[in-house]
Image: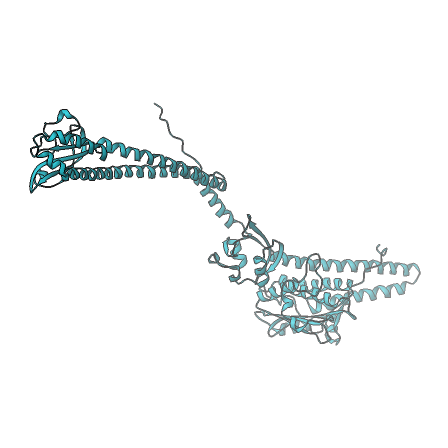
Amino acid sequence: MRILRVPRPHSLAGQLFAMQAVLIAVVVAGYALFTYISDRSQAEEAAGRQAMAVARSVADAPSVLAAIRTDDPTKTLQPYALQVQRHTGVDFVTIMDPQGIRWTHPNEKLIGEHFLGHTARALKGESFTETYTGTLGPSVRAVTPIDDGGHVVGLVSAGIKVEAITARVQDQVTALIGVAAGALALGGLGTYVVNARLRRHTHNMNAAELSRMHDYHQAALHAVREGLLMLDGQYRVALVNDGGQELLGVSGDAVGLSVAELGLPAPLTGALLSSEPRMDEVHLTATRVLVVNTSPVSGGERRGTVVTLRDVTELQSLMGELDSERGFTQALRSQAHEAANRLHTVVSLIELGRAEEAVDFATAELELAQTLTDHVVAAVSEPVLAALLLGKAAQANERGVELVVSQESAIDDGLLPDSLPARDLVTVLGNLIDNAVDAAQGTAGARVTVTAVTDDDGLVLRVADTGAGVDPAHAEAVFQRGWSTKPAGPGGRGLGLALVRQAVSRHDGTLTVREASGGGAEFEARLPLPTVSSAPAAADRADAGPAESARGSDSVPERVRPAQPTAPGGDV
């Protein structure tokens, strides 16, 4: 035998609708039952009061007492009782003698017969009500004595049939059921409307699907490495994933805090508080370089902001190294052009039969090129920094700026500890040189002087230029992201010095700016080293060879002059 099963709604909205409909039906049914019982009880009490009032009125009537004293009380009392019955709305008015023999009755055939009901209490002078089944069926009746000078000379009973009371209650219950049905229909309609809206918001998914989606949502948020930050309409943190906590340096307790309370740098805080969307903006925290995108969430009104964060700290460092290598490559390419030009000259001299002059020219150019390279390597034998200086020298020369390595510069290979990676040095020195070249370009005698040396406090990187200098009032602002005296280029400006400051701060160093001795600005970065010893460096320089000895005896700062590129058509 197959058992029919009522289909259950699968969606959450359908389940809620069914639950609310059943709840409304149960409440309405319970209220209807309670009202029926209450109304019936009240109707019986009201009927008893009505019957008692009618019975007492009849018992107190002088005409009734006068009729009882006659030989035939029925003759007078029967018409009177029927009249009272019609006017008062009761179903019967029975007047009887103390022995219970009826003088009146709605059915005249029953006059003279014994009253069906209790009369003992009335014979004692007490009025009372009861529900009793008499000749007319079950009724709520009142029995009261007729008193004549302290003696009970008769009894009066007035009553209302129970079926009449039931009919009255049924009329009320019918009206109540109509109201309840209307309430149920209205409640069901309201529930349907609410649940229809809920279905749209939940895409008609049931509770299990919503729970599963929530689990996937949480897993996805914590799995992605990119930072995700959600702000509500009051710019409070509504959600932040693991990546966002790590990139911003905040904890899970940040939920509920205002953006201004997170302790982020002012430019980043301003970007998060902006009502306009931000696309691929670069911002710096204490230790990271972040690409920030913001997108307001709106649906007729502002509801919040979704923020994505990408960590490009490593990318920026790699770009710095790549820029250094690219500069070095450009320098080598320029030297290759010059070598080709020199080779053409030597060949031409030989063809002219001037071999001795060709040998002298080739030897002099070779010694000059070797000397220029030796100057840089002798001063800064750290390979990455040496390559950086050669590359930056080529770039500066192309822009009409002379790059000079000062006499006091001395950094030996292997001196820098592993805790101070060359990548950070490239970031610091490369951006300082770029900034100095920008400042010096276009000035008379444009020059950038670089000093790289170690002292008792650690590593010192000093870059001076012949530009316009830095206003002392802006000595702190120049290190903020976005600050620049130059017009914004395609990629924007104002990031280089901010990256320098971040790298220096990461190694607990200091970064300062002051006026250079020859005018312009001088930036100095000091990075502490675990151990700084000048003796090994001095010993190494003593054994460095003729080129470095010559540099050490020269009182003039060594200039890094990369070979000039040949004119068009000069390539071989």
